[in-house]
Amino acid sequence: MELSFIPSTYVSYPLTANWFQSSFVNKQTCFLIKKMAAQSAAHLTTSNVDKPSIFELVASHSLDSTFYPALKRIATYLGTINPERYGKILKHYDEIFLILNGIVQNYYLKKHGGSLSESFYGLTRYNLSSKHFSRRDHLMSLLILVIIPYLSRKLEIKMTKLKEKLQDEISTEDKYKLLGLYSYRSMKASFEFAQIIKYIMYLSGFSSTHSIQLMVARIGLRHSSYQEESFKLSDIFSGNVKLSTILSSLMLRGLEFGGFFLQFIQWWQDSSTSQKSIAQLPIPDPPILDQIANKYINICPICLQNFLIPTTLQISGYVFCYKCITKHLKKHQYCPVTNYPATMDDLIRIYDS
Image (cartoon, rainbow, N blue to C red; front, side):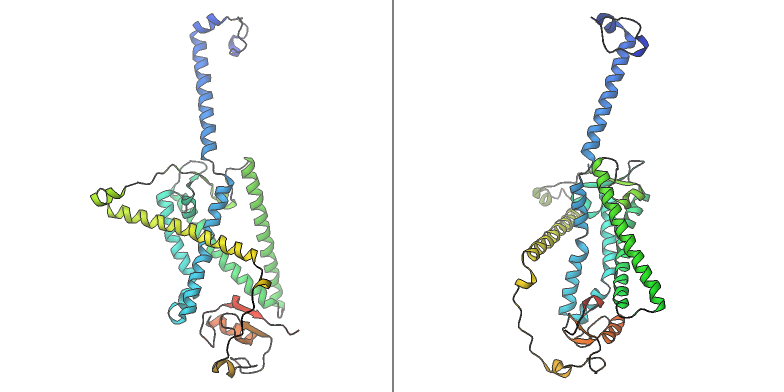
């Protein structure tokens, strides 16, 4: 019986099965081949198991992007019911969220090796070269999760204000600002297109990361092997579990399920909005005019003159001159009549038909 697979060193010898089994060298060769095949199979299996699906990554990103608008709605509600006490929270919301987000993300990166949303979906970060999560990776992750989103939101607000300003009048200096605005839009569109390409490369197996930011930082995501310390209700009463462990577990579970609840509420609102258009909603009755409203009929409450480019502040419903209200909001950020907290985003221009 001839063997069809033998090492190239012995290709000139027609060996039999009995001779092959008795050869010590060939036994060692077979052993090495089997060992290498087993290691290769184990490596492939581990890689496939550890690699998150694109749906998990997108869901994690979606959950992470829910916290900022959800908490801002709460801050807006508090600022509306009590402007004097909670108005400053809405005014400095971006900075407050920056601090809170930094504290939470730093804790999760330190304890779980991933962000809050990534830990919720059982994901952890690692360096693409060393396969470990180092101090450098920790700082780079904080930069990506906390600092860059904050700067991006600030830049977006500034560009929105610049766009509104350039709609009225364009001077020689504003032409350069307009060029910067178009450049910003082009770069943003290019980044979003590149991110789509990155998703396709990740799905096709040509990239280890799904994000451009993670690619630059040389950081990847994989399924976590971390198992949180579990305890039963009887362990709590018997004193076998530390109080700090119980409080930490409750706090983390509250944050994770709170984030999931916020995401569910956002989905519910988006679903309801898509099913009901504004045209189908009943038109509410106009509010009853009080003494303050009667005082400012057909005149701007700030300059007390006829409206010049009438603009309404949707927080309070009062109409002002465009220049008067924009100048006021840039300094004070509240309605000059009702003291409700407001920003430039709350202005609506009124055009005569």
